[in-house]
Length: 411
Image (tube, rainbow, N blue to C red; front, side, top):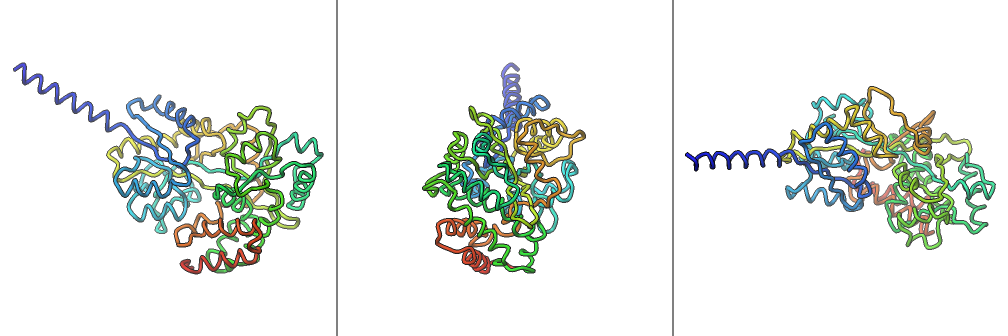
């Protein structure tokens, strides 16, 4: 009898251990910088759900897409993971690596426009919208003040400011090209919406109403050429982190970048900074990048789908939205909260103000151009670097872009 009781007890222990293990989930991400932010968010989540343990396991950003696919294909993928909007996410969903979230109650927290960027062509939701981000130009207030420079209102004003700073021995823009995504995502794709005509202009290119080497696309590459004299000397060897340090130390007066960098600048000793929207040329309407950046997907092969759904649903509860806003400065929750979120950080409020009265759009290449070979993303990177280096004219860069897309893109 005693032995029987011991066996029953052992079985109960094993069952309980299995139950605890089943309540552990891993979150995959391309944001290695967000460990502290996730620590705060997980602590808030565990106040409501102490029985579900969440582990944040990010991947080096440039490697994320390939690493995630390898993990999912090998059955070692995270339970919940950051989902790219647009083509990349669609492809993973089509290949069976994302759970269909269309019928989940938490999807009711979003309007159709937000859900669109994480939907398949037949309207199924493969990701729950989480963050949007904004993009613009950070500037050193002291350097502007000391050199009697006003915040530029036009592209021509911006170039005049850059020329004046350069004449004083100050690097106008900190951006380099060693980390190629930087010159693509936060320079080219910050500028593109204005020059192509916002979302409507992008859709005209995607539909074939305009050609990919249209004068509007040439104009984006021309703007890139305009910036070439004002990047750091030896910019090809300057990586993204070095650019941030250069700006924070006051060695460069401006930097194209996104709202996600606000926390780092907040910590920079002695840095007095502001941010403004990338201005349009005189007579051209300005458009603003407000990018549907991060969705949350659930791995259909997860052994903990119920816990994963509980976690994802909590993210868009009022408590979850508040936690996202508090912990992730510079990332904007996309879910509808019952109360407006009071943003107090001046830079956060500036980024949000860029949307007022302007057409907004996601990054130029995100919706249709990232799945073929060569991808629109890679073509933009190569052509942007070639224009900066004087190896291609803006027209040639646009022609190269169109020719590369013609190898696979269909209207």
